[in-house]
Image 1 (cartoon, one colour):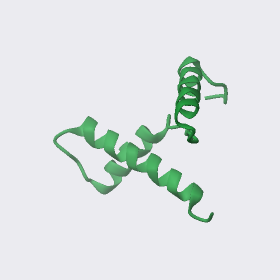
Image 2 (tube, one colour):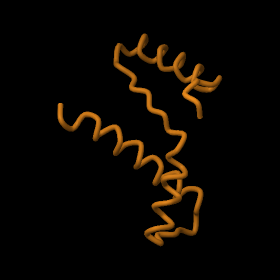
Image 3 (cartoon, rainbow, N blue to C red):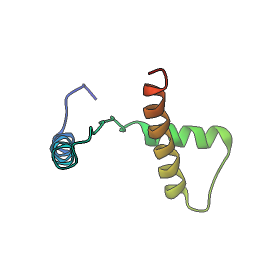
Image 4 (spheres, rainbow, N blue to C red):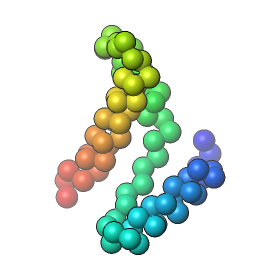
Length: 76
């Protein structure tokens, strides 16, 4: 991860642009590449395991992304 954007990031930015154009709403982009690793670490530290590990990790990663987003705007 050297700071350059890959092909998927390029397509995500194009898609976000289309959504903004059609809805007239701001789309906020977030780098989520490390959230899965962070979610696994939290689950390992808490011992909060599930019968559906992938779904549990994905849910935790989504919660991390949402929390990061909320924290960006909480002082506004």
